[in-house]
Image (cartoon, rainbow, N blue to C red):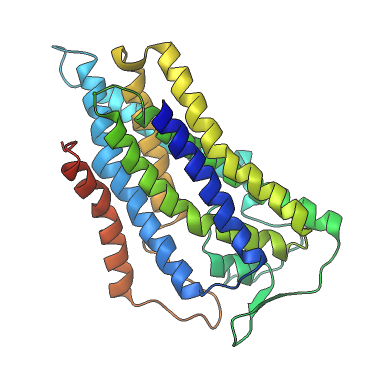
Length: 307
């Protein structure tokens, strides 16, 4: 439990710390793109190489002698994937389309649920000078900025809660080596959240939201994962913990949410369409994704938690 508290605190602090940097510094878009793509690979690797196999093992162990419960496994994965689909499309649809934004058929029409920093800047009227300084278009009004900022922050908070679910259930003592599993999930999340926090703050600034309000939105997003991780840990411990199939099901559901983020919200085949942006070489993109995918598996093997 102490390890979970520590990892949750580090996630919250790092998310907020990365997020406040755009208030004082300008970052290279190339660096942030590389970090975002590596994070996508880490999410894929954590889901396919660690979380889902662990969930299958836990569900199977809870029903000895009855064979592999393929229906429960499939339903859990589909539930996690569907959960994120419903949240993205129905619960927080305006996290994609910002009111008042005009776009063409050739460009994205709004702020994406999990967009790259360069895309967020272009969509919100943020431009960069040759020296790298960030400037913004003339603000419309503070109330309008708050109206535009809320759906974006809300959408990211919802996904932060799903991230917390993954960390919380991975910390349950289902297999006796939960500290290794939770550490791998923690590593994937902390690298994944760095570019997301930077992109969130940059987008909030571009909506003309006052800086104190930007910090409040960022704090809410930063707290979502720690709160959800501790809450899910306590909930599933109360429901049965290590002696019940709840742990395996929860791991599979969280694996489904990771797959949705990595393949739909941050598709591995995505190419930035920002005008004037320097296109990343396909070989570099593939290398970063594959490296990220195999890091969780290699850590799992080194820590004695291979499957």
